[in-house]
Length: 228
View (tube, rainbow, N blue to C red):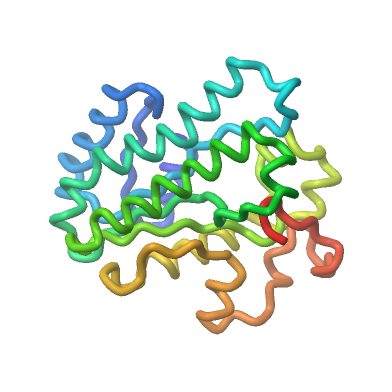
């Protein structure tokens, strides 16, 4: 977190790193209020916190199920809710959750039911808020990549270095997120968006520069879950 804050400052921005637990309502409230105090308001909420465990229903530990629900679904709802009163005063307010479209195919519903519930919960909370606060001009959308992203979570949970080599870099997610949160909030809300489709709509037609290993053909990249 602090290295990320340093990178933001080095790039000419400002950052307020806050240590907290999205499962703790007091931490959530404190983070929202500190942010408003430091910057005078809140324009964007990005729900990125997520726990992954792809175990089957019989193998999934109850504590891990609870953790995924608390961080993924409840965390998205509580942080977004805490920020809404402040977002109402923003010029172009956005909530963006890094979660998948609601694909009800048995292939995905049955693949890892506990994790699917937690990620779909993030999406449902977000799309629900899009409808609930549309009149206030607050956009709420979800964003999901077509391929896996080279992050520590992917390396740990999905297949180690081999999976990392078959993924795209986090920059593709960041670039797509930027495109979303700069759209007019009243006109661009309630959508389940795909990273590559967002960038294509913005005029990007070559994704080769996003390969974690330069030169990796698109056909050799690993497709992300929840997308047919």
